Structures are given as C-alpha cells and as structure tokens.
Length: 271
Image (cartoon, rainbow, N blue to C red; front, side, top):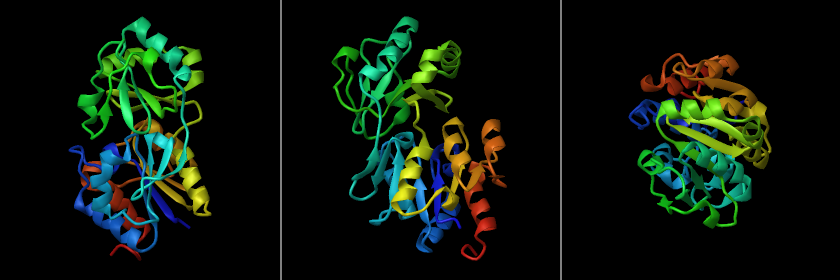
C-alpha cells in the first residue's frame, strides 16, 4: 500500500518555467489531505523551495523534505534535521585538485550556504541557482572544517561532458557523481542519493520502500526510482530512468504528467 509519494522537482513536478501547474498541485493537495505523505526531493535547500511547499500545503508538523539529494531530511516548519550526512573538507581534496588541474569551477555547499571555491575558475552556480542562499567565495584551504552536503560544478553542458569524460576511477569511487541538470554536475558522498534520505524518513514513520511511490526524470533520481515499490519515470525522462521504472507517466512534465498518473492510480481519491 502506497503511503508516501516522493517527487523530484525540475522536469518532473515543475513545468519548464519552474512552476507547479494547478492540476499537479490540486491532485497532491487532495492526496495529502487523504493522509498520504507528499515529500519533495531536491538538491536545493528548503528555503529555495518554500513557495512550492506552501502551494502544496506541506506545512504541517508531519511534513518533511529531502534536500541536498538525500544528505538532509528536514522537518518543513521547524527546519529541524531528522537526519543528515555528508563530507569533510579533506574529502574534497582530490576533487579540488582535479578542478584546479583542468580549470573547472567548483562550489562546495554545507547545509546553510554555498562556498564558491575562490582559487578556481569562476563559477556560474549563483546565477543558475537563483535561490535565497548566502554565497561566500572562499579559497579551498580556508573552507570551514565542518560537514558539507555536496560539491557542484556549474558550467556549460559541453564543458560538463568533458568533465565526465575525464573523471578518474579514484574520483568515481570517492563520490556519487550525478548530472542533475545539463549545466550542473554534483559530487555527493559515495553512498548518498535521494533513496538514502527517503529510507530514513520511511523508517521514521515505521514504513518501508514498498510503501513508497517516486517520480523522477534524471540521473539523480535513479536511486529512488529503483528503490520504490512504485518507481515512476516521467514521459520526458532520460532513457535510463524509464528503463529502471515500474511505470511511465502518460503525459510529460509540461502537461501535468504527475497528476495524470496519480489520477489513474488513485481514482477513488481523485475524482
């Protein structure tokens, strides 16, 4: 029995213009009211998606979000962490050396702010993210000695294609590397993805992955698509995601594909 629905944002729940259609929002609000947990899963911090949470009505004491691609499970209203994990500055040393040798940008994120690494090629991550986060340019050697959620390289797609082609076995062993958007490559802890955070949240409620439905479109959604009792790929999703999914939405993200699938699956709740 599905008790939790977890959704990626970009090119999944969101239209290409970064809005949630009222068709999608209305379906999710109805299911939430009926007692099904609705959980957004994103690489962004919660403050950057607060408008979406309000639109969906996910502002009760029992509502949580998976942020930083699984590294932080956070209660929506109190902002208290249910679970968090990540990497240290030392863990990023090989990645910093790789970026320096190849003239790539790098931003390192903790759970509160972003540190564009100032001794590397300038990054465009701040312009791309367009989120209410603090950006503090910092040389790598001066980064705080505390827990970080991830690092990102934000640049043009062709350069990121080059980055991927140059990744060494050492780097792919050290980090879980995912292309979350055409212009963003993310470096997470080796065992980290959205399924990790969802597993922690399911355990909190006394459930397991058989109780989970997930929606996604891209490489960073694969873990949760594979783990869920019903992993649903978007019609516009990447081929690998569709291949891993149990089902595919009948419509794409710009045509309320999430709501279309939910109406097929929960006809008794969504008239």
